[in-house]
Length: 111
Image (cartoon, rainbow, N blue to C red; front, side, top):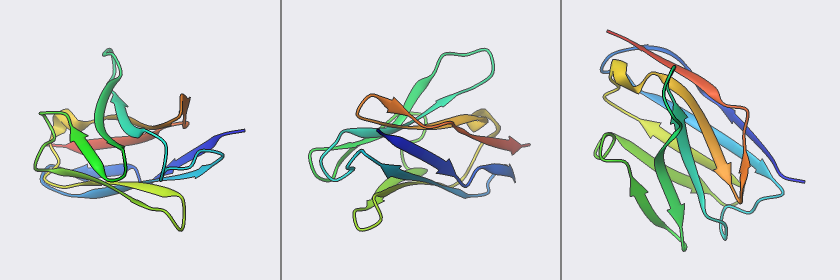
């Protein structure tokens, strides 16, 4: 059974940084396609960053140059480093791996 547990969310001022973590069991990040998604209030869930085929990465245009996805295979943990945060980045952030979702972690960016 796959279990994904996100952490690292919180309240930060615009321009600040946060690092989200997603610890996985049952889904091996080194071989699976995984990603970070977010869902703002009243909006659809959208992909933020993905990692697949080894270390290939893709990013939503809105976060390119500000967010970085990475992983630690020894810990089976994936990270999302978020810099230069903007109020429009406010959302619940979800980790996804192999068709499974974590419970989400709230990120709130104040102006």
